[in-house]
Image 1 (tube, helix red, strand yellow):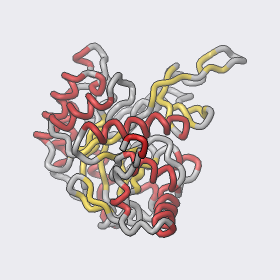
Image 2 (cartoon, rainbow, N blue to C red):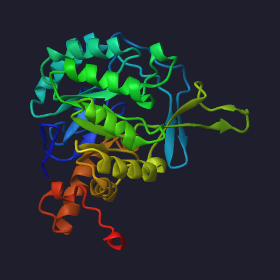
Image 3 (tube, rainbow, N blue to C red):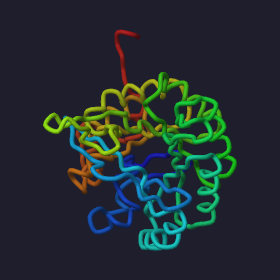
Length: 305
């Protein structure tokens, strides 16, 4: 069940996604942190952030909308209070999600993390609005993405994973830019922009009006984007978006992902990551798959051969 990903050796290809697993340590009594492939922390900024006003999460058909607003404790408190607790689990792979509103913010967070122990890699969240470019997100602006990734790669002492936004015209183009700019891996997809309305009050159900749509509703879109990206870049891919069952995970692997992230499913079942590890292991045994890594890119299209 082991896979090689961006220079890391993961026990299995199941990773807890950012924003759904706290800073890892909060799940220690629920999930065996050393039994899953890795976990990604909540996004960390240079300074603490309170996030958006409630309501900021709402259930939708086959998914949920969220507008948390990147609430987090800030990089300094993470290093001081959260990271030391993770030393109890030396085999756990901790990937830190990093974000900012200016390139300098991203770099400052990475530089603070570089000297900290117990971190396996960085995941760069490029879905934040670049304040220098009038609010356009880094992940939707080819030039801004290229500059940010190049700067972050130069600063990072650990593997750099770039988490792309699906809210773009061509995910393959943005993936190529990230890879050519130094990304060691690509993770996709982040949430899709959406909204919901309360017909009784005639008001948005989220205070922020719009939010990020996640869950099974976005799986077909996410799967298509992983497939397109796998054909466009040579770096490994982390696939995510609506994964609930072992079969969901297998689909993403066949589409070209090396590993998968599980996010929204953890809200319904806090042990979703462990369940996926067991389910995927059982699936491989029942289908005579000796190495889970052999599934990556294994999609066959007979009518195109």
